[in-house]
Image (cartoon, rainbow, N blue to C red):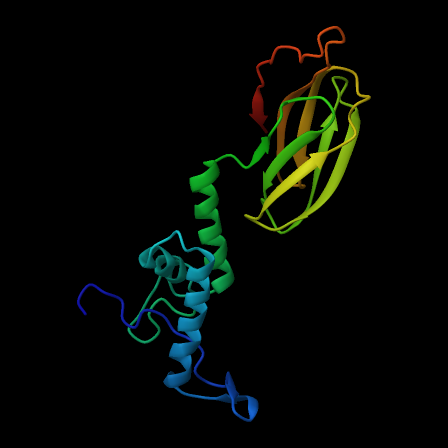
Length: 203
């Protein structure tokens, strides 16, 4: 196949876990490696039905251990399906949210502040609400996974004074802030104050 990498990838064919009439067992051979990887790729496509076959396959190839130096014995090598999943998740999030990964749904809030976060890493992160004096008035600790999407809420903010606040994300590596405004209800008309311009900044 001139100009093409063949075989495409490698898969487990030795000591492959199998399900037989007698129960779970193991066996070796290409007749086991092909169904094994095909099943994994089918699961990957099932998770991302909006993508075509080549997008799925490219994610698998690009996250194989010999992608940079393929050969005619292993192809692109052994795929890391978790990395392929994350790559497709990142592509989905990019199509939906662009390059942004922290949002507020109601930058002018009254009783609660709603936020959306696209996870930056596998680990602990913190989301805090700071007043104009940079004092933390509300905070939450989050255990995140990279590229997972989280809907978050700071409830019970009724008693906060009206004014400008800062929503701050930090995970030890990254800090991002968004300016928000606590609104009040006009007592005589029961109407919200006019909206304000919200500035967004990343550090």
